[in-house]
Length: 130
Image (cartoon, rainbow, N blue to C red; front, side, top):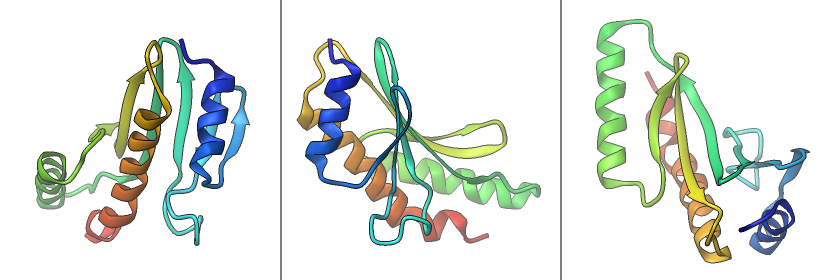
């Protein structure tokens, strides 16, 4: 099974900036050149899985805005994501993915992380424009 040290090593191998916030919790900027312009992806060791998650935005208060956003999220899930999915949690849109630790290798870890950071970068304008 992949350990905390293995995940830290995987992050180093990606050659992207990251910060360990707590033991087994890392923050990876979605946009390395301008880390404050997009939300970061948080990578959490939660045996028997590793969780990738980022909060995108709050859900609009009005029904037409919600409907438009939900339709967009379903379309992006269906045709634009390789790993992970958009979802709703506590009044916010989140993007997440979960991988099992038992047989996790670097390629699978990197693919998931890159898919999420690419999605945040490419979908940001669509998702944050009301």
